[in-house]
Amino acid sequence: MPVAKEHIRQIIADSNISSVAYVYTFLRDGFKDILQELIEAEMDAALGYEKNQKGDTDTANKRNGYSPKKLKSQYGEFQIDVPRDRNGEFEPKIVPKYQ
Image (cartoon, rainbow, N blue to C red; front, side, top):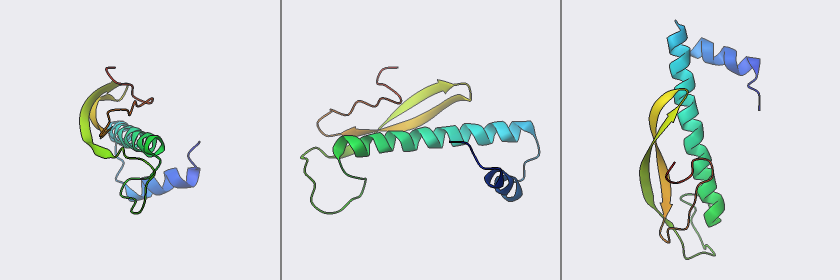
């Protein structure tokens, strides 16, 4: 999904972008945040309910914290938190286990 020019201009207006290094840092942090949200969405889909959703759920399997994972990318090395489930059945596809 392409980013709208208006959104980019708003980011520039809200931030003090003064160098290419700042843009690189901005992209790196954004990439990390997007990956984290994608993994959270994968867990939601695997369990059938969203995080902190109250009410009845059709599964006995629940969230069970996070495991840290270091990633190396074109934006450098950073850490994400991979959600765990109690039954150990969650297999993330975006960032597979042991890779």
